[in-house]
Image 1: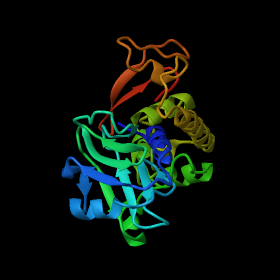
Image 2: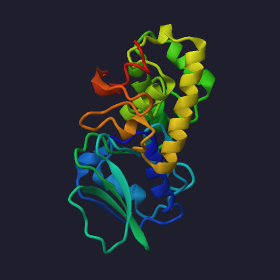
Image 3: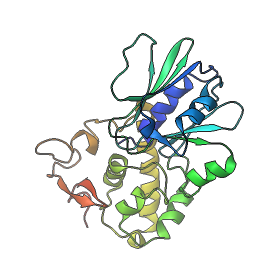
Image 4: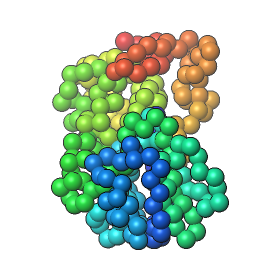
Length: 260
């Protein structure tokens, strides 16, 4: 599932098209359009000069002109944004294609769980994003402390909640908690001030380094580099890693480094 680092990579893809005029709009599957009909969607984008893309959590926004309307993209479980040459064959999962004089942007998604929105004004933008928490990469240590201590859930479940902090997903949360030496099921109200500070520091390290790679990198020194092995062991202490389910997601942790 695309998480904040992946969407930051998609923002960089969209950045390559900033300032270009959309010449053609091809909607190959209208099921990925949310809250807007194909004709209105195509009319809003055709002839528009794309502005500077921005990201909040797992959402990507692209102004169509100075400010509004704005194209909002969410990538669900399998979505991607690609910059393609015009002669490149259209993939069967390319749902929407924006064509420019010198290339294309393609929204590719196999499962179509989310899709593309059109925010015509600030009210519509707020309706889509207004309930999200602060962006997890931009959030301060104080934001982490305040947002996490207002709930009494397990820390992984809280971090996965986009209303608490926006952008964190299964890989980034497991990596952050492993680097912080915090058990994923620990209740947030049992975290000490030092643990909360360590968690926010490690979250920023994980997100900054992952954003540069446009993914959570499977480095040998990171949990992510071992979690999918047949017999995974902790790269820090060598203990066999444990898998379970928290907040409906497969969770991986080290029972020695992250005691309950």
